[in-house]
Structures are given as structure tokens and as C-alpha cells.
Image (tube, rainbow over all chains, first blue to last red; front, side, top):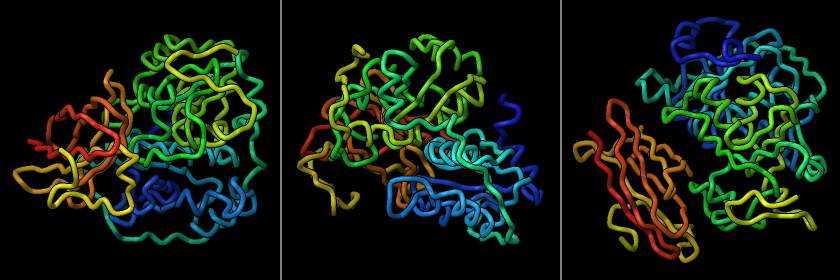
Length: 282
Length: 99
């Protein structure tokens, strides 16, 4: 994968607003953001209801994903362009999710909703109507999703990349600072994980830095390009952003996103945890 | 600096005793800016969080004790940086003017 087939500019999106085979999809942490205004023609996916099982902590299954996309009018051969707030955190999460279920042509709008707004481009509250489709998903691609046992096994052997802010990594904060800090899990990080905040990969306007800059950032942080990599954060959305950078922009093979992330790992009984700014020992 | 100021964001539902709240409003010529982005940078300048302002120009963070920088981005304006001190059990109120 490369930047050319995974990322599109705001200008490109404006030029394809009336292209019926391009489906714009907004996914935001703030699930009400879409309702206040969105890019013309964009449909909304709500990550809390559309993309999560409503009982267990897991994703919707293949049949539910198929029903969701069929209902919203997304076809297998459509170009899906995702965007959202928070510098595309949840859009990157949805990108990874679409890849998990085998959608071929997915792209991110570089800079997401923020760049679009800062450019003073047009938003509308008009709801689009799309014909229903008959969408077929594949089985989940387990080569891009990490579960807790392989994360524990990766300590000291694979690249673990903790993409949270330095204060969360060190255990001084338990959640990103726009959320209340009272949380059930222990503070800290997985021993041997490098701290490369997702934000290092983005410019202030939310667009991605150049490939050369990106490669240097992860190299400096100690990522060994010859090893497999698992990225994690608190609930798996910021680490989707980093997964996108490593796998889709830089073309690194064997990169997984650990969506259980710190809310799972920090609650596990008997696993090692490191506190402070140092990586810690295996 | 302490306590919610008149006209500030409501603290209903926030356990102020356990949080180091940094909140405020972004204005341009005295009018609220509802389409700005405020980022919270830690003492080393590293990004910690970002929120879009509400329709009334308000924003809020749950920080930790110490010094933070608020960087505000708004359409057609240069970024504005403001240093703020946060402390658990108190609410730091900040009004930010953009050009």
C-alpha cells in the first residue's frame, strides 16, 4: 500500500462529491458531530452502535456488518472514503475495520473533518439517500488484529508501539485529557513498548507527515523494521491511526492493531506493567 | 482561576474534586468561535488531547497537575498558544481570543 491509493485530499473529495461510486463515510468520537453538519453526500457510521456488539465487548459479526453496509447503501465495488474528527482517529479505526472485513477500496480523507473545516469548506445538514445494496464481507482478517495473548507474548520480542500521550504512557494520566480521568484499569504501559504518540505522525491540521518524516520518527523511537509490530492505545482507535501509518503509508508488513488496548491490558490479572517514561524490562 | 466563572461551561456531572479541569471559551472580537480546535500540549510541548469548540465556543480538558499549553486553531487565524496551570480539585478558566 502507498499514500496514492490509501489517502485522498480535500480537493479530491470536492471533485468527487457527485461520483455515485465514491461513498463518503463520517465516523466521529463525538457521534453527534455529523448531525451538526457533514460533507455533502456523506453517510454516518456510529462507532458505539453500528460497529460494536451491544452486549459483549467485541465488533459486530460478519453478518451484522453485511447488513449494516447493505442498509446504508455501500456496495462491494464502491470506493469508501472515511473522514472524521479528532484528526481521523475514529475514521482510521473504521478504515482498519473495513479492511478487517475485506473491503477492497478504502481511503482516508487526509486531515479529516478538521482540515475540511479549517479550509472553510462546505458542510451540510442534508441527509443523503442511497439505494440499498447486497453487501458481502469476508471473514475477519486476523493478520491485522491482535488479541491479548499475542500481546503478552510480544513483550521483548516484537515491536510494541504505545501511541498514547507521554503522560498516559508513564501512568500520570489514565485517559486522553478530553475525557474524565477516573478509570478502572491500572496506569502505565506494556513493558518494552516504545512510546510514539499518534500525534507525531500528524501535522497540526491533521494531515499526515511525509513518508520520510514518518519513517524517521519510528526509527528514532526504536522500532525495528525487521520485526512484526503491534500498536495499541486505550481503546484501539488512536492505534488504528498508527496502524494506518505503518501498514498503509509506509508499507510495513505484519502490523497489527490491538483493539483491546489499555482498557483491557490494564485490567488483566497477573501481567507485567511498567510505570514511568522508560520502556521497562521484559 | 478557581471555580466556574459566570457564563462558563456547566460543571454538572463532573467530579471536580478528582479532576484537574482546564476549560474556557474561544472568541473573536468578543463573539464565540464555534468551529475552532483547541489542543492541550504537555510541558514538553507534546500533544495530549484536542477538542472542537462547541457552538458557544466552549472547550474542556481533564488534565493532570502542572503546566500545560493550549494551542487554538481557527479558520482564517494564526494559531494562539496560552500557558495554563492545572490542579486537581480546581477549574482553570481561560478565555482565548483569536485574530
